[in-house]
Length: 599
Image (cartoon, rainbow, N blue to C red; front, side, top):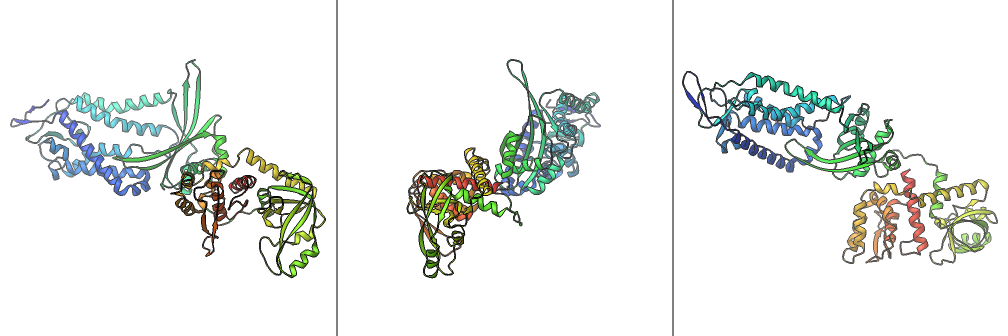
């Protein structure tokens, strides 16, 4: 109704704003509010991300001040849209309202912005969420309801709260229009009815979110230990029915966490959250799966910008990858205690192409003579009676060994074992010589890994060989690849290695990634493609003035070179090319290394 005549001491024409004009004014103002939100997001996006759920306060303030100032006497009761459509907010005497009253009038809109999506993290059940949902649902419902039923005043909820009207700019005079009380009572009862229906419906619908009662500890630990701004957790049971009428219940534990750092690895963060859940002693029901969604972005109520990544798997599979959560995570000040004897054993087995037992025949006089003169390489006969690892068929082989003179030191100068084990039955991890494949060398170019052939040592060696074979055959190392940092970057760099114009830049990019990319390189290193530029130059070790050049031939050769540089370990000589057997052994050695550091 465009025009209403109100009767007072004097007759005055009051032109109320039509529903259509008010609706379009609201749309224009809403668009302006969104644009303000987008602009604020561009300027202060990182700050809003740190605010997390508190970011809604920003939207609350913007809405409160935009409408609170615009609809007040400061701007003659006109926001930008109302000015365009020539309407204004007034009191009963057609006067522009005070700032305080205008703020009161804006409360329903601002409250909706503030409360929408608010987590109820300290609730013990679903009902607080239902109450909050009812309030949020009721605000737009009541706004629409009152503007429809109040045919005379055309007042909506916020108008009734502040006792205001929206009129054309030319209107003046007193407004004495009373709304029917029956509609007011019905409006009050409407939220109560919505709540009752919602609670009743929640007890019968098949898709039901159940609040996890013992999640508070999980939230507290995760919030303090992990780089996240907020986290929520629910138990979700969904019943589905197929065409045959058979019903299946899907049970999920749903976790959503907002990360703070854009560069944080989503997969790794999800696994760390799973680790917190498992360590808390949380009890999963039979058949439940764990779904963890990592989000990054902000929501200030009037604008949002989010990216999300969802990980959903069985509890068993989550538990398989949880041990890898600390692989590229935070480093502790205190190094964990390790069994040094076993550490040396598994490394020796992993580094070796062959492990054999037999009798070593050493010319000890020759060794003593060399020690008095100059460093020299000798050849030692070894008679084999058993092969534990590898494919040596010869019964007698030659082992080449450098004997150090005087006080010379180095990894190849452990010679005492040669005297100790001369003519003894020993177990020896060995590799093919890099210069002559018909001859061999002790693993690591020294004799430190030699063991006496006792039953205890045989058991240790056989057990470790079987364990490492299981790790390789069943790809037990592969779970860590799901959380390896820089995996996508390393994969892209490898492709650039194959192109002449980008190869050099690819080598430089890989070196810049540093040791945090080691896990990704191990996961991707079994690559036999030929390089476009078979030459790399590295300072070894890092910060050293000594520069070394390598002439790798295949992708695997480059990755092995950088791994040696970054991880300070060595599982085979392929830096300047190698045989297929040497390459395969080196790749497997690094995979075993990856499995061990993860465990």
